[in-house]
Length: 229
Image 1 (cartoon, rainbow, N blue to C red):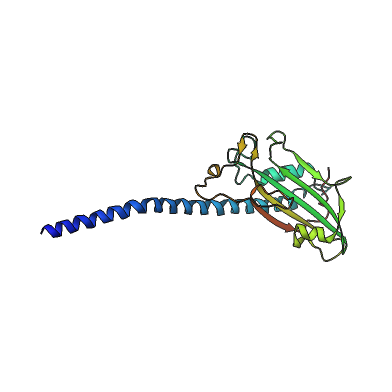
Image 2 (cartoon, one colour):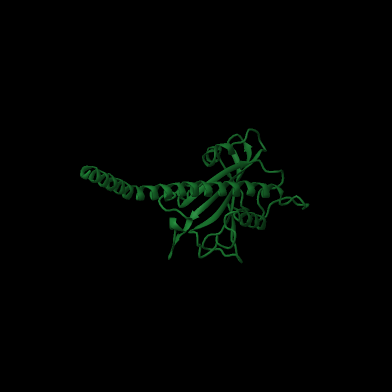
């Protein structure tokens, strides 16, 4: 009888020890599952933003006689495109999520097999912006349109290469950039991560401080591009 009771107590003690060790493992597993869900959720939101941006880009000037996209259009499209994640003004300073939003637009038009017209424009909510003054800049030379070689076009994205002269393509490159200036720094916990830390991802413009990037190449409606200043 004594041996039986002693054996049972030893068995119960072993279960208690195993349970004690399993608790941190279970908690870590829950955190890991949460982080993976959060990671793919943010990727999905950025993908949705990119497709929404493409749709607005194609439709925004439908009711206008002059169909050409303007800087104001780029600003409005970029702002509206990120609202599926940033429901309020959280994409602006002081960046409570530790990230900001950027939508790049790379327009090319084939002149010949090795010559393309090129223009870059973007809408951003970085540190130089606010809700009242969202800065959108068209980059380029002269009137914002320059000429580049086909190798440069392919380096941006292979799907930008056109098959015939006169064809146009636009690469939409949307990013969640990590805040990294002054007292405002990216922190994974602000995005709801416990274990995983989103790696730095390189965008077409060479920036490597992006938490997430999604790219989409479209054929714009005739007359939309280049963007008018």
